[in-house]
Image (cartoon, rainbow, N blue to C red; front, side):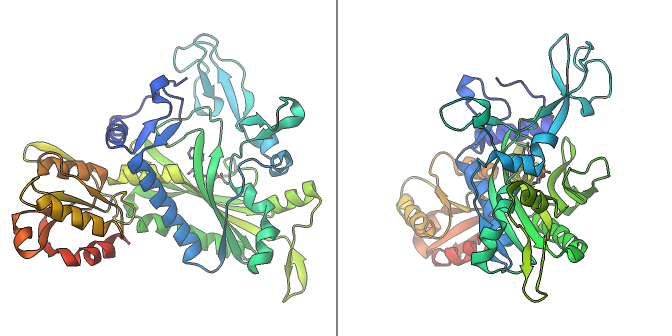
Length: 437
Ligand code: GAP
């Protein structure tokens, strides 16, 4: 099931670290894997949750004008007629008659197969939506789709959210959830997969103010990546030209990140106009207009969409944090994750497993874990324990040693500088909590 994907040497190292440290594993690995599907292990799920939490807080908790939503993955099939996905969410495909490999016609430059030089078929359109059946009978009338974007769950709930929240335009609805696309050319680890999570926000605005809000959201979203510690020189804008624009968009800009495999889209900011609400009004027969009480008029708001991938965002964070250096003739590998999103905030070590050190270290661990995610490790030489935590991206390692038993201080080792300073046990919550919060 899993076609072997070729990846570059940097990505090979990253994938290997992710497996070794329990961030990300291939789905169904014991059966040979399932193409482009990945499972998040103990550290991966913490990291991705922290990315999602950072997004949710920035987009909802810290604002008054955006409400949250969690819509179902399965939606009425008419949604996808209205959205244009049944007619338009397609890629042109060609097959090699000789080696049977399949390609997206728009990504190959030759007329012969790039793999074996064989003859290619004429392009045919392939819809990217996964189909399944609702209920026990597998017939055409029971076909439903796995949503290819979370956005439509927001549009169909526009009035459901508007009424109880008593928001006024401009306001937004945010949602994090799974989306599915039967991608022809998935690959590069969790960059392009067939099952992935999106973090999408739809901002409803007066059509006369669309440009203002488009510019505003471009700036907000760019800054969000900087807040997560991404290096600014690794980010750039890409404006969609006429031929690239999705069927719903009047204008679109992607935030791109420079991966080892090139500059690639990590988030899209789109001006979707009133396309979606107009289409849902037409297909459902419901009035989707907004009533402006001050002006006593009804109109269809324009929508400015910010659409980010949680998995792709996690990959950006991992790739940007990966760091190697030579230390005493050995290669030290560390993930320089921002303490705010690091899966483990601090590790607690007894220097040795005797002289009462494990008891003190356990007590510190028990106290700290009430405040943030900590990890206790007494296995092997302390240098090895530091290295393991470097690879896990843990910003602080606290070691209980002989001096601790005399003056209630521990060493606090900084992941990036490797410097160690001594601090009172009673100050640790404040010292570390202030940096990871
Ligand atoms: N609602 C608009 C929309 O879905 P998109 O540009 O198709 O726009 C938005 O997707 C984001 O979703 C992308 O920037 C990317 O982060 C993520 N994404 C899309 N397809 C993906 C895939 N196959 N695997 C992982 N992430 C994907």
